[in-house]
Image (cartoon, rainbow, N blue to C red; front, side):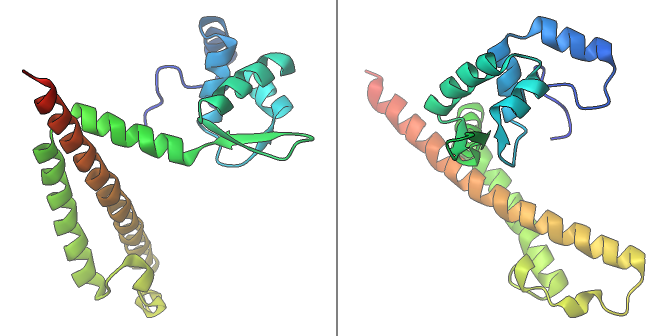
Length: 184
């Protein structure tokens, strides 16, 4: 997604007014959450506190809660480092999809992606993006190389999305079955 969520931390380089508004309108916990959701590498409490415009103790308290909730992963002990827990966000995405779409809507999206996957398999004459020969990038111009890299990137995204949507469809079916048996 290219759009920032409503509470997302202003990116670096954003004017001071936007950052000030973010700091004023969000609690310490919310600001720390906004920061850790962007962390793919481990960072210390003090680094996170600086980005969240809060005290180290405030960040530590928020991070402790986020750790208990499974939203962050920790590493080390002195200093403890934190990053987003990818498994939590994957689970959350699956739950959101299962709540927002019916199993048949999810299956339709899966079918569309499978067709696109088949098209890419034919285009590259390979069963997966990782099986594409490096020779595909020899003796071609820059624009063609760029186009092929974009297609491979899209193909990897398609594979990931199919997996997530399949899990969401299964979860949506479980929700439906549970609600069917709960109804008198």
